[in-house]
Image 1 (cartoon, helix red, strand yellow):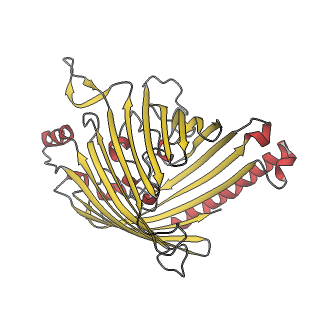
Image 2: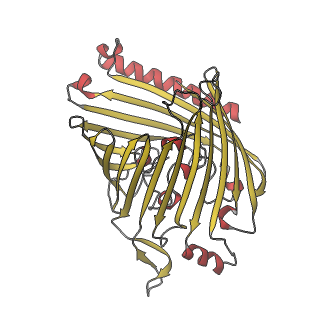
Image 3: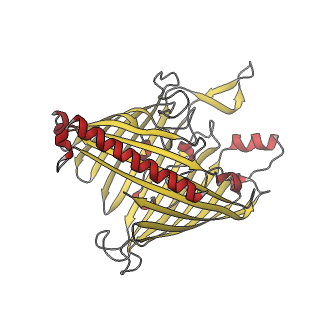
Length: 397
């Protein structure tokens, strides 16, 4: 199964890049010369993951993720000054290891509910000098908001964006694997200070999803603002809110329908270099910590935290070696726990996990073994603590 997925994805990548290059050359032969206005790239990842003990089932799963990126300099292509365009295609297939752990947050960040090809991002960015820019189009919220670079090696989805925000919206917020139409403004008054805000369609949907791109805005907007400082680390804070009320988990109207509730929250991001020198120095270490809180009325989570450390160049003779350790805890909302109690399930107040992962390159292939231990998956004390082992294979082209 893994070999089949790998072969299929590599073939698709080769065909896609060939078609893109052919169309580019045909439409404007000058672009095919040195210094092309369009840059194409891609990445492929395949995971083998399985629950070794605890959880709901003990078995292995194979899943994969193919990404094709395109970046176009619009000034060089069509004379649009200080503007760029970007697109990203996804193709995900394979199993769902989270089904075997019972975790609410998940254990693999390339797992999807619908296995299909998608147009993930497609936006245009206009720069206004060096201190401001605007993006508009299909936009990944987590590409710039609620993000810590030093958490990027970890496989658990909670280290990408906090679960208290990831679980919101009619179809999830505008994050992997489905984005939404958005407009983002970013201001950088100096190299170390930034402020950014974005308005996104509350209903995510892209080409490849049922119904395609959602353009009606019938579900309102998701508004997010974040400001921070970057230097020898990062300090940032953000707030988010849906303009249209969501269904309350527990309260109802006199007619028996879910009562409307405001979905909103805030988060804090911290990151700090632990060693001197840049990221190319041997054993360069960075630590991160994050805290998120939400209303607790509209999803299973009312908050959570994540913390960890990333060590690059673990071995001086292995420049691509990297080690990361992460801890996270998802805080379950009272209403979610009360609903479970009505069904005869007594849940704990949280789901906790620890992850240890190591990555290194052998030739062009990155190999990354990973181990996760999830305590009280889904907050369910009746489930055994889940031990999950995985290995990720990746290649960039």
